[in-house]
Length: 484
Image (tube, rainbow, N blue to C red; front, side):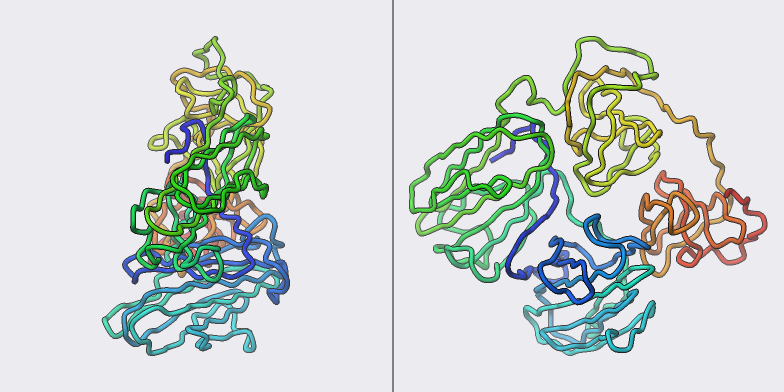
């Protein structure tokens, strides 16, 4: 069932589970999904502050942390995955600051907890039979820089490594996380955890995934979506049982055998992020589930409030009564509302709140003020607060007063892992983007002692540490202008 086009969705992956689930991956041809749990201590004691799915284990947090709710120092994490591997001799690589441990099927193959080896590539070898294997990576961060890169390869068939290239975690629009269980009460470890675009399906006598039995199975779908203040109708049509939770409150409770029956409830919600959970079980015979969520108030159902008057000027009003909350992990702010030709001025982070200035004519982009930088963001990735009618800017042009920057003839390459691009030459400056391992970027300038390079990368201008961005051989450093 399709979610209403008026609903802005974003995957926040705030999973509150009492167990550590494993993720099924069908061989190396598919991405390995890791269930990561993050703790505000170095011993992984107590409940995790954050549980989420990561597509890769290749992080460079700099002087920061994985999440705003996790301290910059003295934190720890654990990732687990259940992957389907062919038989062979495997080598595992890991590089971390500070400590890391790697286990395969419970067998420890790498451990720097005792030796405290920091910022070095460590390896471990193991021979594996074909089939499912449990991979575990444990990590501790004390003080200073924090990073982790992990990879593995089957040496028996000529695979090589390490490959520490960053893969963006799944934060795509409209994605849910689905858990599938081989029983009717959502207990034990799920046989699969998968990102899906919608809830439910019409499976007939079959199942959503091959690992489930045809009867007597259950599933859970979770997401966090950004909504305007409105009254919403939740509906679920199920054969057999279904439950729906909104922000932890059970609003539909029909956990019983049934022919396809539609259940509905309405709830008035405030503007912002809301967590939706849908649970389902199949007893026998045909299996189907449809879920829908619709805003009922026509005056506020549109993601962007409109105003009848328009303006052709690119000098927008300084003040409106609206703000937006960023509802995705990282979001580009561009000089014009175009993802292909708009220059990236800066990036904003999930949970940040900024004043809204205007909108474009199609209601697909809004102009915001990011601490003095005025730019455009895609409206699908923000939630409105105190929404009011906004003036329209027709045919927007760049509002940036930045003088065009001329690049030098030199390039730098990110090595040995993905590194942060910062707003200035130092770890005390904000992280505005990532420079992927083995990618190259144009050099614009340097600081006085050449320990930081100013670069242009994918339309973003920022600074990278010379320690992790290697300049091309033979470059005349003295000819590169000092820009800071």
